[in-house]
Length: 337
Image 1 (cartoon, rainbow, N blue to C red):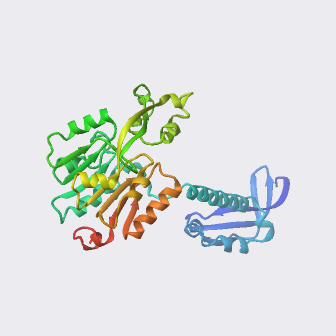
Image 2: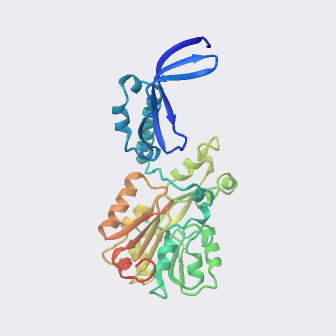
Image 3: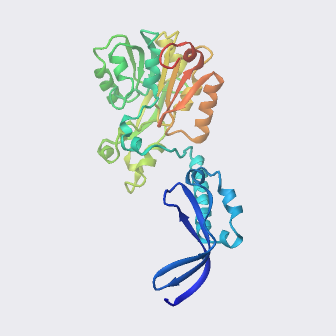
């Protein structure tokens, strides 16, 4: 019989052959030249693997194990894993992020996953309406990452497109030059009529960050955030221009918009200020879509509270938030009814 090298008392994780039951073996472990032999208590079930993953038997596991087993490596690893998960969850929530479980197949085919965004909501609303009136703040050139382009070209949207940058505004007019029912405004939405400084990326630095020419607004913070780790002097990336400004009541009055079905805002961090200036008492758009990616946590919460007070249903769609007026949603027929 082989000589035993040493003997110790420990706790070993053990899984049954069918992998349906999680067990622990508590007893003496004897090491010899043939490997590890266990003597002592029989394995006792403490819960299924699914139960352990769902967290329903964690407390029971700790209570059932002997005190010496609770000090073992297996329990320590489980406790450390739990603490790490809780810490990461808190940190993610602090930045308005969260974990989401998804089937591996959906992760591989993420382009085929159905997502509810502004195009989905507009398609639902257009089941009962032939034409929607709209205002688009920050239209850029009308084609780059623009969710409204196909609706406008098919003649389902009619209204005003606002873009403050002169050169980009010229491209916007060219994009839709053959589309009727549109008006164009070369200005930025501000607190009053006048002029203001507008910050954008210089052309020679645009290739360093994708879509950087769209990072333009009243504040250079968005540009600096993206270029701070790329160039030695991020301030050198910024070009400052003077643009005309117009307040919301002035814009609606100039284009005689008495009713508004859809409001689209993409203002690189200035979105909540524009939304706050909109008079929801006089105009109640059926759909509001705005960018939240560059909003501070306080502004994002304030924007959501504003929309909730006016009885909108809201949904974050990645970089944006789409809001659907509850009364319109509940009265509309179709695949959401």
